[in-house]
Length: 450
Picture 1 (cartoon, rainbow, N blue to C red):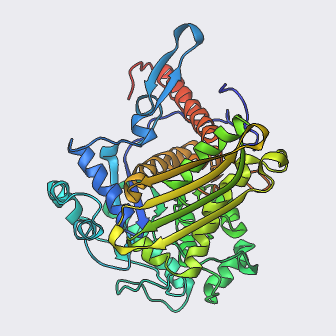
Picture 2 (cartoon, one colour):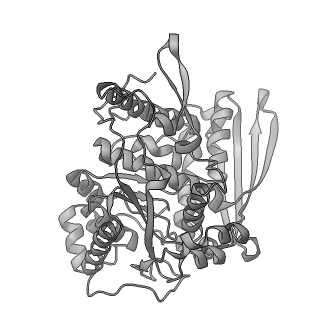
Picture 3 (tube, rainbow, N blue to C red):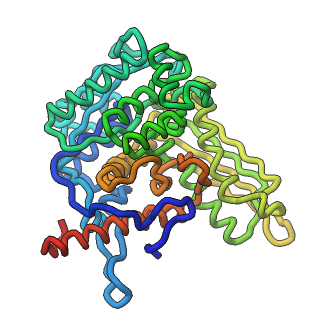
């Protein structure tokens, strides 16, 4: 199961160091709102024994290790060489200068009683001024922003922030995870096609370069893995892909797969496995947090809707099963409804048909908590991207597709949306890392887990 190369051409059994990390890992986050404060506050609570890391593969997942005669189930955190929660240091940027305690209270996700128990930890974290362009996030405005003559000036300021944060906190390594708002929909243009063209565009203030691209550029220049948790056009553009390969930096994204799309990537494979037809799938959402306000703008909404639409067609393969899926009508709606806050509600009506074409229906009402679902994903990708960087896996990390609505894959590779296929690829890679770590321990005469 584990000694193979995956169909995308990524070497599953490529060399890996197998060494356990030393030193502290910095996690820098552009956009320190609901998702970021829920993630940071959650890690702080877990460190203090006030909660459990539910939903995090890195903390609660397992791997089967050993041969058939001596198989054993081991926690991922015990056998895969990952950074420890106690070694994480948090920072980032935001257009508001509130410390993380104030921001978390304002976000209204975590209970005040829990926040008060970790108040000193959160008050110690205050965001740096952000790179912001209102043309890309029309429904927000904040005073805590950087200014510069050109976008290259802004990128240079971000690089300086990264260097100063690393030095001030005595960090061994860092990762950057975009948890900011959805930017207005855009498509690749001439400025995105090469590193030289992109850098010329930064110097010329090209309007096609969004803030998320500037953050990604700065991260790659500083040798940091970059993760895109939103549906923005960012890490998939050829310029940033080429720069990441040049600087040997891992990239992954895009758009964290949390609620409704997670359900789709579970149910659609089941329908396909049973060869049940799908005539229509109507999805709508109501959301009232800052993300909901941003998505009230049609251009930001378009970026999110496109991200949410892609999974069904890839999973069901209507070209192979035209009788079952060729006429599928798929609709996704997102509505801003302030009273709901971060507690997103997703409704799905699924029209399926079975034997002799007889119709059936499935209706789902998912009362989820958007940031609660996203926080463990942020933790996982932070630790796994650090693992990728230490292991020499640079460029696009297809094996992390499990975490994204619109997984970015290497050029020419097909996208896998089936959650269970994605999980197998994720565990294959983690198993490879665990095997290397076991070999490294044996070579050093160490038999106990780290």
